[in-house]
Length: 239
Image (cartoon, one colour):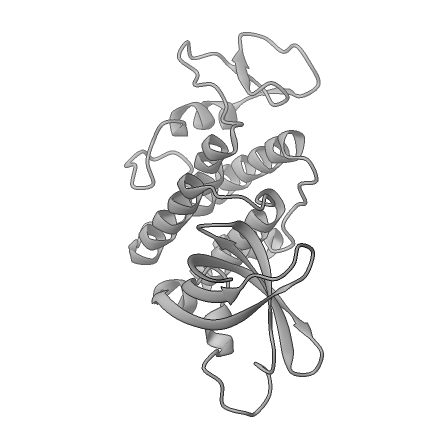
């Protein structure tokens, strides 16, 4: 059976001297890996490596293989050509960080149109926005809603956050309970949008504290979650 679907490129690895295996989050079938033969050779091909840049939004045509076998990509068509994400060094490395997170948290091979559309629309906003220093942090916080692990809102302005249970408390009740400025910032961010006008997370220290909190939260709530290798590079660039 031949099918077509929108897809977000998560990354690819080289396979043999001329071929690659690309991992995509597809709109119809969830996460799938595809074999592309001869894409790294000198021969002309309708599929180019440029199609496989991380987070590219593409339309793919593939033939479904037997269960457990890699599918072959027959054709790729670019749907959205990002401009600033692929040319701005800060945005490029932010995209690298996000793609690493997505590989670690989105593993299901089933349809999830809501999360697909959230990622797609977020990337479109990011590509067109000039205010983006907090995008990677906000993206991870908003993504928790689609993963079913969103923290409860702090409606009573409590001072402690229980990482293990995703709740705000009036006092510390475990070793995974924290307080301080970062808890107040998390309270303010929950429920906002990417273009929020608050001055929350206005300096390097605040951003680092928040991303460390969110990654710790992911590690507790997402089985097998791995810390992105690109985090140190991203922190250095934003400093």
